Length: 134
Length: 134
Image (cartoon, rainbow over all chains, first blue to last red; front, side):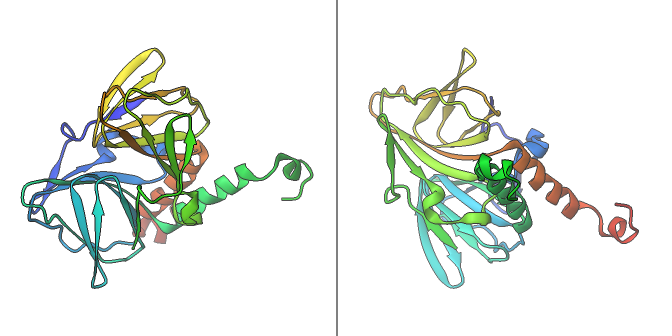
C-alpha cells in the first residue's frame, strides 16, 4: 500500500490555485489515468479549462460551483462531477472562508475504451471463452 | 457534465457499511475504471477484502485507518491510498462520532497497462510519429 498526502505534495500554482500533480509519485503504468489535487482559495475560481481528456472530479473539501455551457452546478464535499472531452469548465469556490479542494482523475477517451475492453474480456463467462466463442 | 450525489445513490449494505456502486450510472466505456463510495459508521470496520484489481481510495469524509500486512496507516480526509493487486486490507473508522466515507476507483492491472500505452502513444512527439520511428 502507498499513501498520498495532499499537504506535503510538491505543488505548483496556477494563478492562486495550488495544484499537486500525481506525476511526482512515479506510478507510471499502475494507474489507468493521470491525477491531481487542486485547491481553490475562498472567493476565487479556476481559469477556464478545456482539454481532450475526460475528467472525474471528487470534491474532498468545501463546495464547488462548476460552470459548464452557461449552467452552474453545485457539488458539495464527497460528491463528484464528470466532464466530457473538450467540455470547457470553470470551478468556483463561493465560500468566504473555506478552501475548496478537488481530486481529479483524467484520461483520453481511447484509454477508457482500451480499459473497458480489458474489463469486458475479464467478465466474459469462462465457458464461453473455453468454447472459443470469442 | 454529469454530477453524482453520494446521498441519493442507490446503495447496498455489506455488514453495516453503505456501498454505492457506480455501475448504476451506466458510464460504460467512458471510465477506465470501476468505482464506488463506501461509508463506515463510527467504531466499525470493513470486512477483510482482497481482489485482483488495484484500488485507489480517496477519503472524502472522516479519517481511515487502513490495515495491510500487519501495518496500520492513518489516512485523513482529502488524502489517498493505493492498494496493490491482491493486497488484503481492512478499513477502520476509529472515530466515536464521525462517519468515514471513501471514494474508490479500481481496475485490473492489464487495464492500466492498456491505458498507459494509449497515453505513451499520445505523448510521443509528432515528428517521431511522422518519421515512422514507432
